[in-house]
Amino acid sequence: MTAGLASAQSGVDAYFGLGTASAPASTIGSDTFGDGNIYFPPRMGGLFGTVGGDFMFMPHFGVGAETSFRMSQGSYAGLKYRPTFYDFNGIWQPFSGSRRIVPEFQAGLGGVNLKFYYTQQYCDIFAGCSTSNSYLESSNHFQVHLSAGVKFYVTHSFFIRPQIDAHWVNNFFQFGSSWVPEYGAAVGYSFGR
Image 1 (cartoon, rainbow, N blue to C red):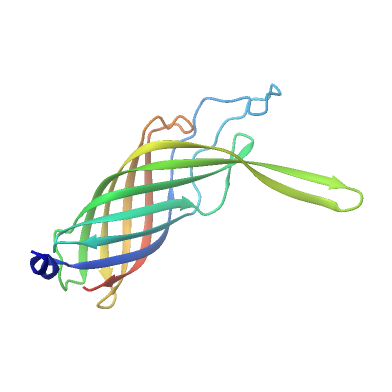
Image 2 (cartoon, rainbow, N blue to C red):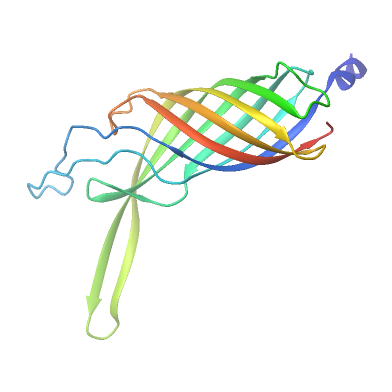
């Protein structure tokens, strides 16, 4: 049984990418600081980084994990925020082996973590001004993840993969939609291809 699984193994991939995720702004304002001023959240955007890997236990089927995170904090209703998407996926590659172009489809489950921060500036006559950025709280949500991409092998093991992701996030009230599309490209390496 072990020899059969080892001979069917297609390999392990590791990758890092850049892209963006977007969601429309929520139309619900909030009195963030309790001072009577209403703040409206922005639409999601900005530069996202992606890190992931997969294990192809059969020539066309495998499993993988991926995390995608906003590279810097963004403004959110008087605060700062940083989202992180993470998921565990089943993977199907219709073509595999020594081909230079390998389409790939993923589907899985995971979560989204939204961290919120408060930025404050302090000034005094002796030390001048300094800025502090304090973590306030986070909000966690269940997500369903779908993805389609194509690996373009530039060498036998190095690849470039443009990818489109769709995240359906349960109760994503901080933004105007539960659907969050993500667009990006990754560079990676296949071990044991």
